[in-house]
Length: 430
Image (cartoon, rainbow, N blue to C red; front, top):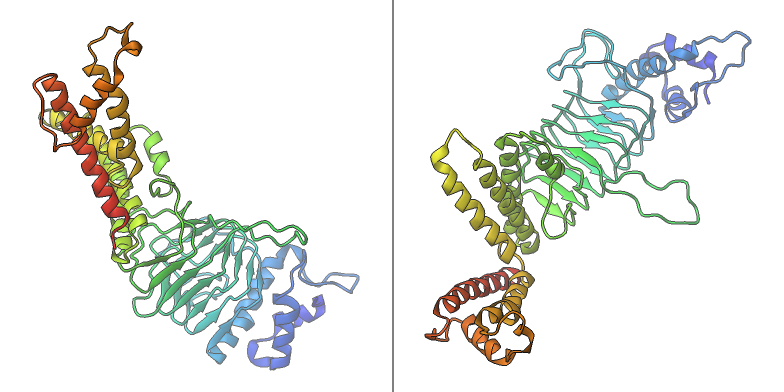
């Protein structure tokens, strides 16, 4: 740990007055070391105010590390342990030139990193703010730890950005973030709450990070691998067909569920805009997975798309501004409900199979039975079962007896068989 006397010296000289050994000593013994004070006092009278430790840290970053990065054309923050950023209640994202000292920059400097930058294995102890920052070089966040919220709102990445094995323990806000359209952006195996303490027992890390990619224009050079999107907000994001989701996981088992969808349904008086947002996101994800021939996940996204369409039709029923459309909306809702209940939107093999089996063996034989309700279980079941089985399949002719019931069964069973065949085709599509 560095002493207060040495630290006071570093605060009194400029970067040009240091040699590489002195700068390396500052990095290893101060920037990469953290304690309550960041330095130790050997004198009776303290030379530095311990309440100013964060301010001292950022002053040394501005005074030495930033000039060192410009001189070497490479900002190396590998292994640094950062305290809280400057506590500002509001930092407007349109700010480009500062009129006050702020973390990495002095008054009058632009909020930008001109060269390649590495935060590999760095640790951010408090809330981190990169709002509106421009990264002109390659950016590496390999194994970086963000212990509290990190803000990349309206930040610009002009070259490659790597978030590989990055730990986000709180919210990771990428709202309106601009990613490069010429070089890659990689989110691979990012995690949360990595197990560091237990030496003998292994507990798997939590991958459900609270990402927020609202209003982000994704492109084909962005790739997600091994990311869990259980708590990810994609509000108004543009998910293009060639954006790569590899080995990623989503919420929901039978269908794909985007974060906060259920909350949207629980809140009353929500506008259709909320549901249309989810509808568009599900449609985009469906097309994305279909373009990579990942039919199962594409089907799950399609299920969610149709589910939202169903409820949009339901809420339109109560749109009294268009009273003439109410009967049409009721029919649309009933048809989409039938489509979902009996076929799983043609994504389920089991649903139509179970329904056609139950209706053939149990439901329609009751209507073909001439016995009274009391005698129902003592009647000849085999005869009514034979009639029901013949009316299940469309290639058997309708008989004169029970004509209308048989007609209804043929239409119903034929529809279920069609759903079953379509589901088989989609499940094993090549």
